[in-house]
Image (tube, rainbow, N blue to C red):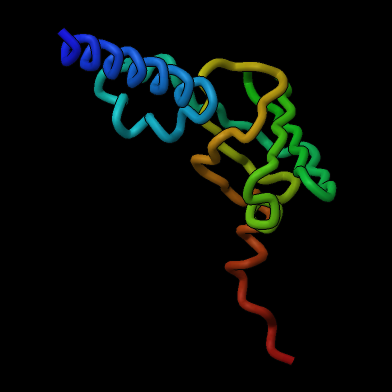
Length: 127
């Protein structure tokens, strides 16, 4: 009888911990739950970076998307994202649902603007 109670208690504790982790840090469970949860719940949103502002402990980025404007707040990997993304770049982020305010979205893709790409590929004139 005690083994069944311990087994049932362990199952309940495991289920509750998985639910809590999914609420707090869903990117940790995504590789394991991708086959069970339909991909329609996670959407990729592309938009142009209209404004980027760096503060001491966070990075604010305003994206203009087809669904509207959203403000992404990054508190993790601030230096890396600040170096990678510039105003005018097209960025694709992964969201569970669209919201005008997003915290720490996952960056899927960053594309430089066409003006930046053209200037990098042109060789400089000899002097």
